[in-house]
Each structure stands twice: as C-alpha cells, then as structure tokens.
Amino acid sequence: MENTETFVLFADGSSINNPGPAGAGAVLLDSGGELVFRLCMPLGKGTNNFAEYKALIYGAGEALGRGVRDIEIRMDSMLVVNQMNGNWKVKNQQLQALVALAKDVLAGFDGWRLSYIPREQNALADAAAKEASALSMAGKA
Image (tube, rainbow, N blue to C red; front, side):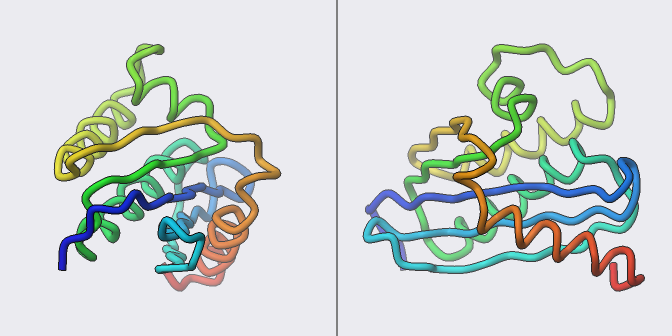
C-alpha cells in the first residue's frame, strides 16, 4: 500500500557512557499526527553517533516497508543532519559506511528532507532510544 501523504519520522540514538550499551529509537507520525509506529532497537555496544545513524536507517527502512513515499525526518543530532545534508565532511570510517547505507535507504523515497530539531522536540524518539540502550545494557541486543 503506497501512500502519497507526507509522514514525519522522529529518530534518535542513545549510548550509555558513550561508547557503551546503545539503542536506536524512532517514531513515525502520519500527516494528521497519528502514531504509525514506534521503533525501539537495542544495538549492543556502540557510540552515540553510531546509534543516531542506526535510528535514521532503521526508522526510514521501516517507513519504506510500510509504503511511505514522502518523509520529513527530524533529529536532534547536528552531526547526522549536517553530514547527511552534505554540510559537514564524514571523516570517521565507520560513519562513512553508515552514511552510505542511510543514503541507500533514503533513495527509496520519492522525497525526503532531514532537519535538525532541539532535543526537547524529540522526546518520543529519545525515550525509545534510551529504552533500547537499557535493553542493550541488560544483554537483550
């Protein structure tokens, strides 16, 4: 089922003690603000930046799998937003691979935009990411 409305994806990553137990969180809302899905993905051990990229990749992938064609992505990671939008260079090799993967996923959409939001506006994804980190800490990743 393909949908032409614009959906909003909030994505966030978390790492306890950075690096440490990491998690990815994402929340997709439809154009009316209704919850479509909430993703809470334990990642094992990783950095916060690793978790941020994984949240983007998993969240966008889940949206694609549900037939979303146009998406507005909002994140509180200036690093991810600026690297993905081509404003900042990606020097870290692990992040280079994640950028490439994220771009591959985003290429599946007819349209996508990625913008920075303050942490306070990303509370739902932040809570999911922290929950996922706690699951990683408990050995559930």
